[in-house]
Amino acid sequence: MSELAQRARPAGWLAGRRVCAVAFAAGLLAATGHAPLNLWYCALPALAAALLCLRRAESLRGAAWIGWWAGLGYVGGTHFWIVQPFFVEVARHGWMAPFALLFMAGGIALFWAAAYGAAYALGRTPRARLLALALTMTLMEVARVYVFTGFPWAAASMIWLPTPVAQLAALVGPFGLALFTYGLLALPLAFAGRSRWLALGVAGLALFAAWGWGAARLAAPLPDTGQTVRVIQPNAPQHEKWHPDYVGMFFRRQLMLSAEGPETPDVVVWPETSLAWWLDDSGSAFDQMASAAGAPLIFGAQRRDGARYYNSLAVLSPEAQLQAVYDKHHLVPFGEYVPFGDLLAKIGIHGLAANEGGGYSAGPGAQVLDLGPLGRVLPLICYEAIFARDVAAAPERADWIVQITNDAWFGELAMPYQHLDQSRMRAIEQGLPLVRAANTGVSAVMDAKGRIKAALPMGQAGALDAALPAPLPPTAYARMGNLPVFALLAVLFLSALALRLRKPD
Image (tube, rainbow, N blue to C red; front, side):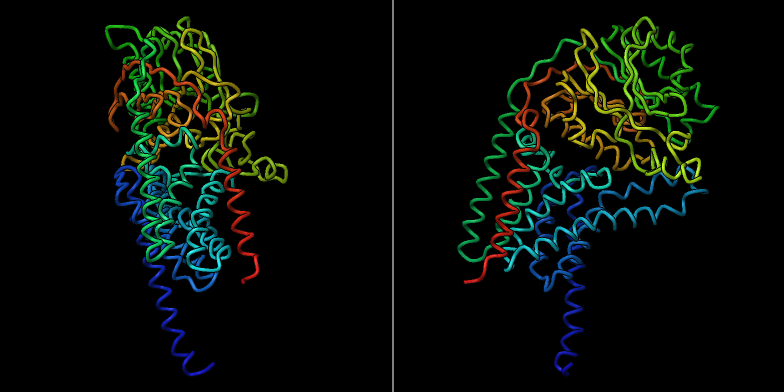
């Protein structure tokens, strides 16, 4: 190696480190677009800066590193709440908290690394690579939904939720909104000179059109059904929720809150695992629950079926009879089950398999429950609300969605609010109202355009009475799903690949 090359190498290495540092900072700032801050006007320029860092990549490996650091900042800034469950029993699990955050952020950042590396490989020039990055980042969002059962938390499209632009999800769904987001940011960055002004004009016109359409959709009137829902938030801290000394107190609190108010509601909703006993052994409690509610009661409980256990939602009639039971089908890996647990049991590693009490078994899939005068309801338990595909998988169209959840594991700073925002996006996509009952908050009733009509504050016990909003006709996304966007992504990818393989003139 020449003396000149030896001198240049440290300078290039240092420059690479600086680009990665800028990418990390930009990703971290982009995280402010999510709850609890929701600073979309800060997050979008920061995300654009993270994309722009790809211009400084000098190799595919360098591009992947830039993407990984940008992803590390973004995921670390949006997923920091993952440490909270380890502090429920801090003496036993507290030491794991930093490792959990590092492994989660670093692992999800690999999707970003793959997107940046693929964009570098697809484009011959910096301009082409930036345009390709809008495509590969959207494909990254798709991969995050499906790979390893999926975890699409804090998708970039969620940044639009405080604005009318979020209403585009009713047309194109989460992936279409992601492509709009990355394309809007990448287009002006890819060009220079006069072409940049043209690109800025196109991007500005697209944003103006999306904002205007969303504002018009929000302005259209939306009636109520004339029915009233009562949502119960017992506010049971996780470290007390299952303690024998407190179980009875939380149950009585839910009974008292259910019976409050001068008028009887049309339906009462309790949160996830709000019943501390096995559903099969709770017959003696049903009379008290039905009497307190005075109406159909939707509640969460654990259920046994032979050697298998389920995280379930049940509907209790005013006559204290079980009307319907739904078993959660999209479980949290390692949180609710151990992957390959049944296989491990066969080779002598017991206590991990779902059918041996080490976790839950998955239910058969999405269901719609017929509640008679209350209409048809699509039940979601906790984590299922972050997946648009779980809502779209319903065998028929519901009249409304109910989500029961227990976010007490994750503190009160960010995760419950981010989870609430994802529920709002599901309402927008499907054009269906959504009722959310959370153990410690945030419990809410939202309309078919994702607007919160009433809510209970975080960390407060209470009963929320609200009118049940009416559904909208099926949205374009509800009718067609992801197929149009997937077709567009395929066309864009094949076009980019064809341009890359074409011989230079």
